[in-house]
Length: 269
Image 1 (cartoon, rainbow, N blue to C red):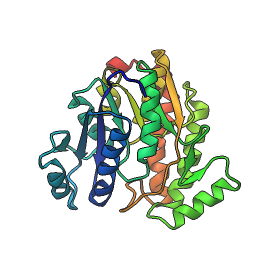
Image 2: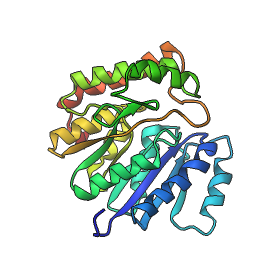
Image 3: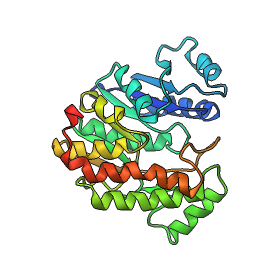
């Protein structure tokens, strides 16, 4: 780890993830201690959860100024939850990740170590490069897809969502200008100045990530993929949807994003 000081704002977009936050926030704090990062903030941006998220966050914030909580009043939106966290961040580098517990402290270490070495680059946690894996299964394991399906069946995640997500990602990687292999990651760190409100504001769900990757490609901003093993959801139900129709409908904006990205003037969307 570099001796040069490094500060980071970490954003967790949430909707009914109280049980996962109880595990995830201490995991992140302990991880940052392990790599000697003391200048940090963790901001939970909540889309009006109906569980005990507010109570959980109140306990975390009690006497801890490095933990922040934002309750959104606007229409529920994953991309805009992320943007609200970015906009309110105070450090030069911003990271965000899912709050479902599928992205571990070990993964955070690998990503932060890479961005500390390459401060002008964007680093993406990738399931589809060396060292990566899906639903608790390494890519180089024998029968990895079958093993991943088995892991999902035992978890709170959706088998259908996993299969379609895998297919969508392969399609997006094929038709996008960017050479990033995990086009639906949502696990990323980069300079705050690299992220544009227009990309998040015009997105419906996770397709904001497709726009981002192609925007970085157009701007010659280096994207480094770091392999991590995406686990299964710890608690709660996936927000992605469980029916084939829901998932296919949700996938259309991703395909559109990949097809039109090269023609977009991102600053004037």
